[in-house]
Amino acid sequence: MLKSNSNKKYHFKTIFYGFATKKTIKLVNLSFLFLSLLFLIGWYFSENSNKILILNKLKTSNQLLINSGFRIENIIIAGTNNLPKDYINNIIKIYNDVNIFKINLSTIHNKIIKNSWVKEAYIERVLPNTLKIKILEKKPIAIWQNNKTNKLVTANGEVISHGNVNIFKNDFPIIKGNKSKENIYSILRILEANKSLFKNIWSLTFINQRRWDLHFNQGLVVRLPAQNVNEAWEKIIKLQQNYNILNLKLTEIDLRNPKQILGKINFDKRVIFKRKYL
Image 1 (cartoon, rainbow, N blue to C red):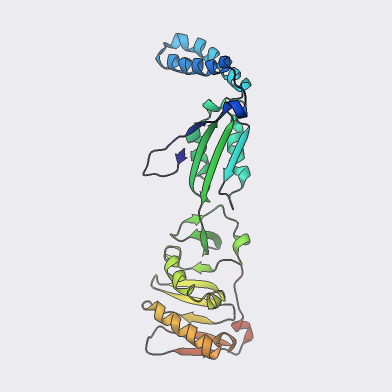
Image 2 (cartoon, rainbow, N blue to C red):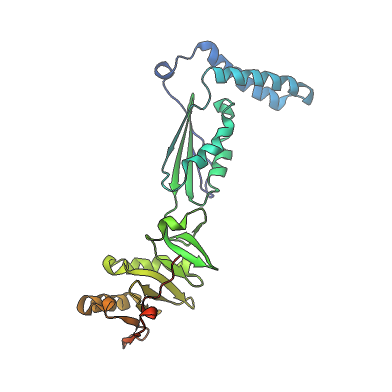
C-alpha cells in the first residue's frame, strides 16, 4: 500500500489471492515469475555487454507473465466524489501492455496527488490482475474570490484549483479579503451554530485581517467586531428571533462597539438588494 504522507515512507502492498478459485495458474507459469526476478538481479549485477541479452530475455518473460494473467484487468477506485475517475484511468492506461509487476506504484501515486482534489492516495496491487486505489478527497467549505477569480478552499486554507466553482456556488459562501481563506474556518464554526440564519449569508469579507463583515441575501451587512465574535453573533440571532431583522429592509448593523448596536436603512431598493454573483 502506498500512502501520500510527506512525513512517512511510502508503503507498497502486493496481495496474492486464491489463484485456485480466481484463475488456474500452472506451475510452469509461476516459474516464469521466479525467472523474471532472477533476470532483474542479473541485470543489476551484470556488465553493460550482457545487459542487452538480459533485456531481450526480460521482454520474453514480460509477455509470458501477461499471457499467464499477470496484467491489469480490474481497476477498483474508491473514495472519489469530485475527482473524475477518468483522471485516474488515464494515468494507469499506459500500463495496459506490461505485466503487473512492472507497474510503478510510486509513479502512479505521484501523478494522482498532483490533482488538488486529492488529500491522500492509497494503492494496492492485488495479484494477479487488480489494482485497488483509494482516494481521500479534500473538503471545500467556501469559495475564495481573489483578483477576479473564484476558487474552492478547504478549512485550512488550501486552494482546490481543479474544482468547478459553478457546481458549488449555491452550497458555500464567497469569502474575500487578504488572509480570508486562512481564517475562514474559525468564523464559520461560530456562524453555523445557527444554521437557519447562516444559510442567508452569501458572502463574508475579512477586513484588515482583523474582523469580518457578513453579507446577507436580503441586502443586510453585519459588521462584526474583531473580538468576542460569539457574543456579537448571539446578538444577531436574538434580533432575528425577536424582530425579524432580515425583513426590515435594514442595510447595515454595526456591532464593532460592544456597548451599542447601530442600524442603517437605505430606501433605495437597488442598493438593498445589490448582490455580486459569480
